[in-house]
Amino acid sequence: MLVNTPIANLYSEPSVGELDDQILYGEEADVLERSNGFAKIRTEYGYEGWIEERHLAIPRYDGAIMRVVTPFCTVLDIPKYQGRTVVTLPRGAKVEMTGEDNSFAQVRLIGGEKGYIRRSHIAALPGKLREAELRRAVTETAKAYLGVPYLWGGRSSVGMDCSGLCHTAYWLNGVAIYRNSRMAEGFPVKAIDPANMNSGDLLYFKGHVAMYLGGGKYIHATGRAGDDRVVINSLFPEDAGYREDLANGLVAVGSVF
Image 1: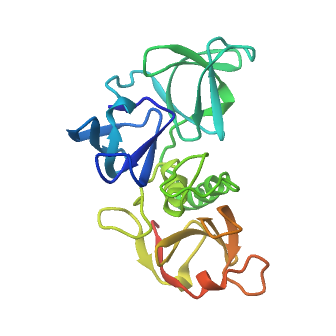
Image 2 (image 1 turned 45 degrees about the horizontal axis):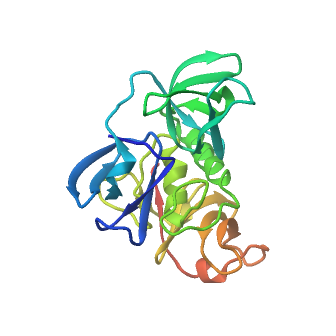
């Protein structure tokens, strides 16, 4: 099944309640069970939750699969700026590209409708990256979300939570880490000696996770009053962005490398 809405909410129970995760347009999901208009799904990245069935569609892709790489991307009905907006998709959404028309990509939407996207707003799914390339890519991806508001369970340009940010930074670069703020069996992040932490590694606190950028700096989605968004802070007291509560509350450091 494919998600047919720009951002679909996942819940821990088959009802609309506390947001647990979000899955984006075009991402695939396996249906595990159904109940009262909801489907329990397993996402491409191995997370499970309940989604309203109306957000799922049966079609699967036949053409080249691309991801949106801008904060938001407008799909138009003609390959011109003046076209009618068909749908607006967030960074990370997947579309099927069926051709090109000057500076536009022709795409087929999940319902079969044809649309056009600026070619520079989408890119092919990533291949396997070497360690240095992946460290650089995940930190740059995380920084692309700077300023995005904090949203519990969020995983998009509309709103992010702490594990959503770290997960998305890796997921958009071809690596599926666990979606919550802890390490889990079956996923690639393993505990390392904090003395060896490097850019792209993950800093785990009680109920919170951040991505290390190097030089004592880290990026995270925080719900702390006055911040409430994706920001960069520091482990070092001499830095302006020092967070004493987090610097003194580091529980573990994890790495995929």
